Image (cartoon, rainbow, N blue to C red; front, side, top):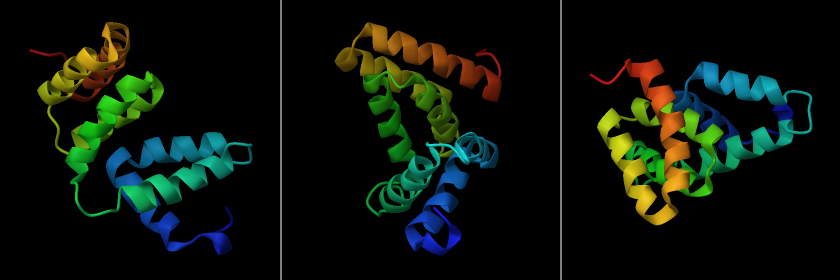
Length: 133
């Protein structure tokens, strides 16, 4: 998406995406896709998911992060979960709440999905917060 084709949704989306996920995460995602077939998808996700969904009123960013954890566990989207655990911390969720969200999801999504998600979440939590103790 060239600059002259960007609409306000992209601009709003990139702002929210950076606030939630962090500049390093967003820059890495955009850089990986730059000049590739995935570049338009990154631009689309920024405009639609981050610029149209995350900017809506009605749910706090904290609530959206909590929902994302459950949905990403259900989808077994562990690479996306990695970034959203960091985003959840940014949005005010605690280590305990993230863990409980994954445990709660295990009852609906199954143990294999939850175990896979917990492995990724544990890596992020230890990197961001240190070992549990």
